[in-house]
Image (cartoon, rainbow, N blue to C red; front, side, top):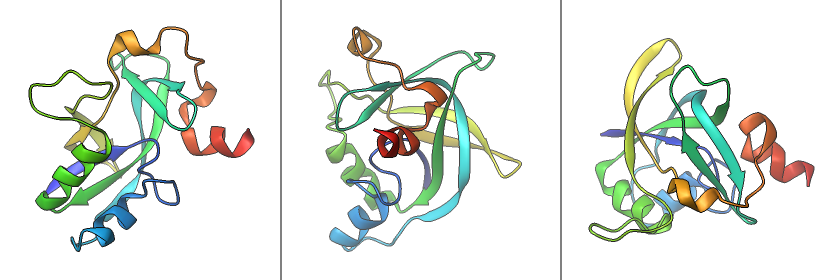
Length: 135
């Protein structure tokens, strides 16, 4: 089992809902551990957001959910985010220590390459779901 922090279209109810992705591939549904924040900034790419990480003392945070996932779901998430070994894409897969419900755990997450945010509007408050609903 692995842990993943999702902040955009992989969140429950969004177009790439992580639970629906698991169901579609006959993989065990992920276990939701809780809502949390991660230091970083969130940008609007139109139909999806992109996050760039910042130092942990950064004033900006991104809202997301932490899930415990079956190892088999990782390949599905990589495909959704178009993360392929040896290929430079928009999203990258990284690991970060994150606190959720008082416990610190190592999570995978999918930030965008820093150069990709040029000219993109920043999402105030760092919450994709709230931003999308308010548009």
